[in-house]
Image 1 (cartoon, rainbow, N blue to C red):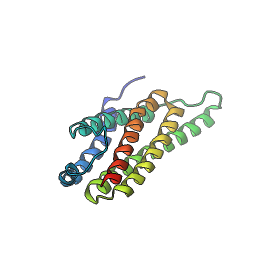
Image 2 (cartoon, helix red, strand yellow):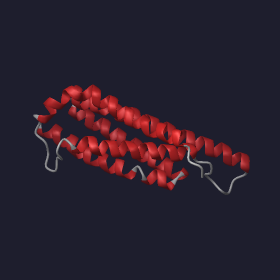
Image 3 (cartoon, rainbow, N blue to C red):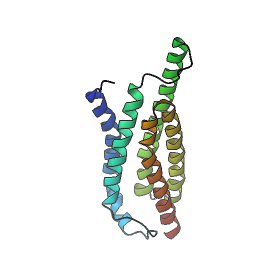
Length: 169
């Protein structure tokens, strides 16, 4: 399989840009966040940008693998296979896009508006979308799906932190 480095970089830069813009928009909420009561196991502040940079990079790589994928089902005719493949790729990449939008909005709800319970519910929606995305990616590329497992685990931990902050404040 030939790698298209330009496409790979674009696929990585898209989620990194989403995270950067969200971080820029919510930077004012960090002061009030520092004053909140936090649940046990809350990591130091520097962990969040490091973790998200890694997760956004993995998301970008996985979306690239889906975007360049050529095969999906072996037991179908050529035209049926191509139609199913394009539909599967389209659906998987659409779910990827939706979860990026939901991901982008979560810090706005949490940090800017301080809607902690709503942000938790929004995070549950994000978790569901990411789980759906992993399943859809898995139909096309096992590696692409596995690259998003750390993201789902991080969202589970973020859900614990988000709910804890809502309960403690």
